[in-house]
Structures are given as C-alpha cells and as structure tokens.
Length: 176
Picture 1 (spheres, rainbow, N blue to C red):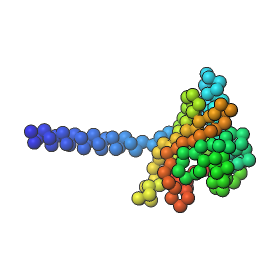
Picture 2 (cartoon, rainbow, N blue to C red):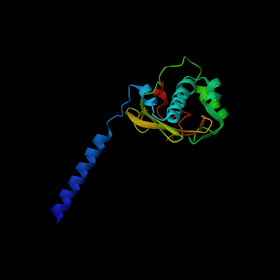
Picture 3 (cartoon, rainbow, N blue to C red):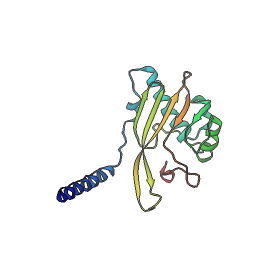
C-alpha cells in the first residue's frame, strides 16, 4: 500500500510539473486585427468597431476630446483604480496619455475581439514584471470588457486589474 501511495504521489508531482511547464507558454496575438471586427450581425460588427476605434483614438491615442463620441457621461468603471464617469476616465487617462497620432491598429498585441449581445471583450497580451522577482518578466492574457448601450456608446467597463502600485498598473512600463 505504501508503495502505491509513493507512486501516486510521484505521479501527481510529475503531473503538476507538466502543467506548470505548459502554463509558461506565452499568449500570441492575432496579426490581423481588422478580421476580428467582422460579424454577420451588423450590430455586433458596429460594437466591435466602436471599441476598436475608442481604444486607438481615445485610450491609446490620448484624444480625450473624442471621448464623448464613444463613452456615456455616466460610464461605469469596474477597475478599482479609476472612478466611474467619463469625466473621471478623461482625468486619469488623459493625465498619462497626451494626444499623439492615431494608429490604424491597436498598439498592444490583440488576441481576440469578441462581441455577444451588448458586450465586447478585447483580449490582449500583457508583458509584466514579477513584483517579487523584478528580473523575471513574463506574459499574460489581459482582458477588457465593455457594455455598449442602446445609443451605441460605451456604458460600462471591466478588467482584471488589482490596485496599482505607485499609480501604475502592472506592466505599465511595457505599454506603448
């Protein structure tokens, strides 16, 4: 009986090491962002394009003057570092993103843009530094989910952010 337990324990340890090794495969971006905007449903295609353009123009491009074209004034934010409301978004993000030329594609590596109902989820590759071991840099999958209201504006946002350290999200040093 003791020998079976030892064999089982070794097997579980081996399985654990195998799973850990597979967990280190970095996520990969889809090189064709525009193909991800397509949908047979015109409303879903519109919602994907809205989020895509918001991301490029407002979020990455820093053109906060364009935010009203994309966001409700009563925008609800579920990230614990930014208050709700379009004005709060503009104040926080506008401080760290001055206007720059608008890129034709989202600059961060995009894995997928998926729309279902009134939700659009963008999954991206995020490069981060291990807080416990600053020499260890790794890649993870990040997501941003947006709810689009009946007026075709972003009304709500979710992401997996934890509280920022020194006012910056994990991986901010690597963002474009």
